[in-house]
Image: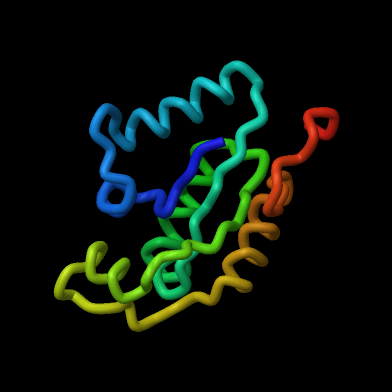
Length: 127
Protein backbone atom coordinates (compact mmCIF):
# COMPACT_ATOMS: atom_id res chain seq x y z
CA UNK A 1 0.00 0.00 0.00
CA UNK A 2 1.27 3.39 -1.01
CA UNK A 3 -0.06 6.67 0.35
CA UNK A 4 -0.50 9.54 -2.08
CA UNK A 5 -1.99 13.00 -1.87
CA UNK A 6 -1.11 13.62 -5.50
CA UNK A 7 0.35 11.70 -8.41
CA UNK A 8 2.42 14.73 -9.37
CA UNK A 9 5.88 14.82 -7.87
CA UNK A 10 5.92 18.48 -6.83
CA UNK A 11 2.64 18.26 -4.92
CA UNK A 12 3.46 14.87 -3.41
CA UNK A 13 6.78 16.24 -2.13
CA UNK A 14 5.28 19.46 -0.74
CA UNK A 15 2.91 17.41 1.40
CA UNK A 16 5.04 14.41 2.44
CA UNK A 17 8.40 16.21 2.48
CA UNK A 18 10.47 13.09 1.84
CA UNK A 19 14.05 13.16 3.08
CA UNK A 20 15.46 9.73 2.31
CA UNK A 21 13.48 8.92 -0.82
CA UNK A 22 11.89 10.64 -3.79
CA UNK A 23 8.60 10.43 -5.64
CA UNK A 24 10.34 8.35 -8.31
CA UNK A 25 11.16 5.82 -5.56
CA UNK A 26 7.45 5.63 -4.74
CA UNK A 27 6.67 4.84 -8.39
CA UNK A 28 9.53 2.33 -8.49
CA UNK A 29 8.12 0.52 -5.43
CA UNK A 30 4.78 0.16 -7.23
CA UNK A 31 6.61 -1.21 -10.27
CA UNK A 32 8.51 -3.74 -8.13
CA UNK A 33 5.31 -4.89 -6.44
CA UNK A 34 3.61 -5.27 -9.82
CA UNK A 35 6.58 -7.22 -11.20
CA UNK A 36 6.30 -9.60 -8.23
CA UNK A 37 2.53 -9.98 -8.80
CA UNK A 38 1.72 -8.41 -5.44
CA UNK A 39 -1.60 -6.80 -4.55
CA UNK A 40 -1.08 -3.06 -4.89
CA UNK A 41 -3.31 -0.51 -3.24
CA UNK A 42 -3.03 3.20 -2.81
CA UNK A 43 -4.31 5.38 -0.02
CA UNK A 44 -5.41 8.34 -2.06
CA UNK A 45 -5.84 11.34 0.22
CA UNK A 46 -8.74 13.34 -1.19
CA UNK A 47 -9.01 17.09 -0.84
CA UNK A 48 -11.98 18.49 -2.82
CA UNK A 49 -10.82 21.31 -5.02
CA UNK A 50 -7.39 19.77 -5.49
CA UNK A 51 -7.93 16.05 -6.09
CA UNK A 52 -10.73 16.86 -8.54
CA UNK A 53 -8.98 19.76 -10.27
CA UNK A 54 -8.60 19.19 -14.02
CA UNK A 55 -4.79 18.96 -13.89
CA UNK A 56 -4.81 16.45 -11.02
CA UNK A 57 -7.55 14.35 -12.64
CA UNK A 58 -5.59 14.16 -15.92
CA UNK A 59 -2.43 13.24 -14.02
CA UNK A 60 -4.33 10.60 -12.01
CA UNK A 61 -5.70 8.97 -15.17
CA UNK A 62 -2.18 8.90 -16.67
CA UNK A 63 -0.85 7.43 -13.44
CA UNK A 64 -3.48 4.68 -13.42
CA UNK A 65 -2.74 3.90 -17.08
CA UNK A 66 0.98 3.47 -16.39
CA UNK A 67 0.90 1.88 -12.93
CA UNK A 68 -1.45 -1.06 -12.43
CA UNK A 69 -3.30 -0.69 -9.13
CA UNK A 70 -5.61 -3.27 -7.57
CA UNK A 71 -7.37 -1.04 -5.04
CA UNK A 72 -7.86 2.65 -4.40
CA UNK A 73 -8.61 3.44 -0.79
CA UNK A 74 -10.27 6.84 -1.01
CA UNK A 75 -9.28 8.69 2.16
CA UNK A 76 -10.37 12.07 3.44
CA UNK A 77 -7.43 14.36 3.88
CA UNK A 78 -8.03 15.70 7.39
CA UNK A 79 -6.05 18.85 6.97
CA UNK A 80 -6.90 22.54 7.08
CA UNK A 81 -7.88 23.29 3.44
CA UNK A 82 -6.58 26.85 3.53
CA UNK A 83 -3.21 25.75 4.85
CA UNK A 84 -3.10 22.87 2.35
CA UNK A 85 -3.82 25.13 -0.62
CA UNK A 86 -1.39 27.74 0.62
CA UNK A 87 1.36 25.12 0.95
CA UNK A 88 0.60 23.56 -2.44
CA UNK A 89 -0.12 26.64 -4.50
CA UNK A 90 1.48 29.49 -2.61
CA UNK A 91 0.03 32.82 -3.64
CA UNK A 92 -1.70 31.34 -6.72
CA UNK A 93 -4.84 30.72 -4.69
CA UNK A 94 -7.36 27.92 -4.83
CA UNK A 95 -8.20 26.16 -8.09
CA UNK A 96 -11.36 27.60 -9.64
CA UNK A 97 -12.67 24.65 -11.60
CA UNK A 98 -13.54 21.27 -10.13
CA UNK A 99 -14.42 17.91 -11.60
CA UNK A 100 -16.31 16.67 -8.52
CA UNK A 101 -15.11 13.80 -6.32
CA UNK A 102 -18.16 11.62 -7.08
CA UNK A 103 -17.64 12.16 -10.80
CA UNK A 104 -13.95 11.38 -10.46
CA UNK A 105 -14.70 8.07 -8.73
CA UNK A 106 -17.31 7.22 -11.40
CA UNK A 107 -14.86 7.97 -14.22
CA UNK A 108 -12.13 5.87 -12.60
CA UNK A 109 -14.61 2.99 -12.31
CA UNK A 110 -15.57 3.34 -15.99
CA UNK A 111 -12.06 3.76 -17.36
CA UNK A 112 -10.38 1.26 -15.05
CA UNK A 113 -13.03 -1.39 -14.25
CA UNK A 114 -10.47 -3.83 -12.80
CA UNK A 115 -9.64 -1.45 -9.93
CA UNK A 116 -11.50 -2.06 -6.68
CA UNK A 117 -12.60 0.88 -4.55
CA UNK A 118 -12.90 0.94 -0.81
CA UNK A 119 -11.76 2.27 2.47
CA UNK A 120 -10.35 -0.79 4.24
CA UNK A 121 -7.78 -3.41 3.27
CA UNK A 122 -9.43 -6.55 1.92
CA UNK A 123 -8.56 -9.87 3.60
CA UNK A 124 -5.68 -11.69 1.91
CA UNK A 125 -8.09 -14.44 0.80
CA UNK A 126 -9.83 -11.92 -1.48
CA UNK A 127 -6.67 -10.85 -3.33
